Image 1 (cartoon, rainbow, N blue to C red):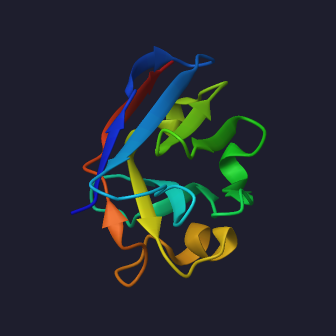
Image 2: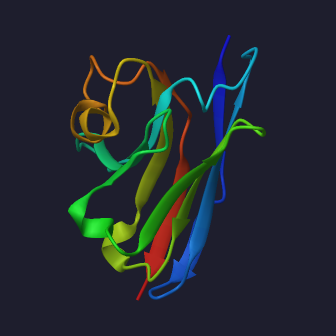
Image 3: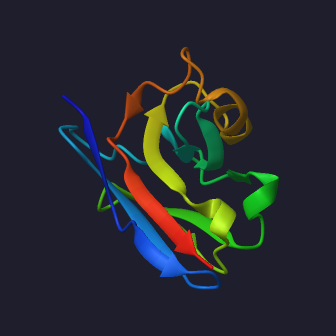
Length: 132
């Protein structure tokens, strides 16, 4: 069974940086080169929103709020997804989830991947807290 495990969250001051990682296991072959993958965020009582996504060809999409500050990337050999977060703002604070799905473009995954019928596989999340 495929498992996605996030790491790298933590607490930093505004203006700082964090790098999230998502390791995929339980899959034979290159998971990250097969599925569209992405990072999503969710706050208490709020819907899950796309932050950044990347498809099997390496095409990327970003939420407007993170463009120019966050970079999504993947290492197919390590079956690992990354999110480099720079110039962090207080409003970036949230739980961040790694997800994977088939049949999505990066654009589709960003906008509908967080819905109930969206991405198929989800990690358990990592918390990001930004202080002023």
